[in-house]
Image 1 (cartoon, rainbow, N blue to C red):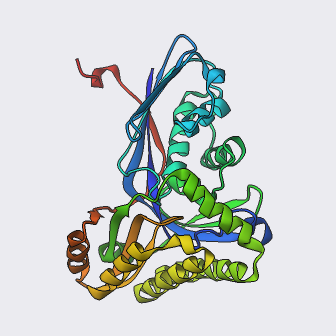
Image 2 (cartoon, rainbow, N blue to C red; image 1 turned 45 degrees about the horizontal axis):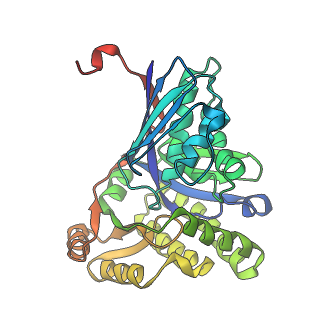
Length: 343
């Protein structure tokens, strides 16, 4: 049997960082994010023996094991191994992954990968996991199995899909509220945004270092104050979109970036600051990186009919602009019909 899956990546508009423990337990977090039409794709082929073959097009790595229990965490395809161990398929399999977006670039791709893999195994289960359960397994696998520092936002965004206001109140309490806004507002928002890939953020270990320093600083008054402000801005941005106030949205996006930089100096550098100022000079109202750490993707909100000027200025600096649109489907899985296969 051949199973395929697809899970989108996300853009976080406001509240990022408030979904990470211990802030969620202490204060409760909130984020506003949307998924876009860039995906992680997966294929699972069941086997009649217990052997396992893991393949990643993004990392150009292929690994073969005698069985699931034989797999060791060594830095290569560890998330794929961890999900397989947690899901316990009970038979051998082959898995192939590829992404529309380079990994580790600030759009929640690890959450998308986790949800994608769980979706493949879940498709084969007699008792299916629901979206909440899939998201929790993805999150807890990173936290408990791999000992990574992460928040819940990425997994929930990838699994549910769409433009959502997501609240976190400690433990596994998560409320996903799809925003009910006018289509004209949504189209206008999409029209004003420019997404740019400004380069890789560094290895995952470097990003974990940034997140650990942020987590360790949660008890510092100034850091807590910034997270409180970021959480409130997620509520304010939600209201702005519901009211069709995109001017307020752009202002809040700029303020979210300012508070984000206060949390850790590693969120920006000379290159990021230069691109920010370049965007502002050529017609952007605000801009921010889309995840933890320097580099990855940067999102610009542009003045009316200035998008092309911002794009032109960025491309002259060697930055790759990413065409995208909003996506509302979330995780999808399906079976491959033998008739679809090439002869």
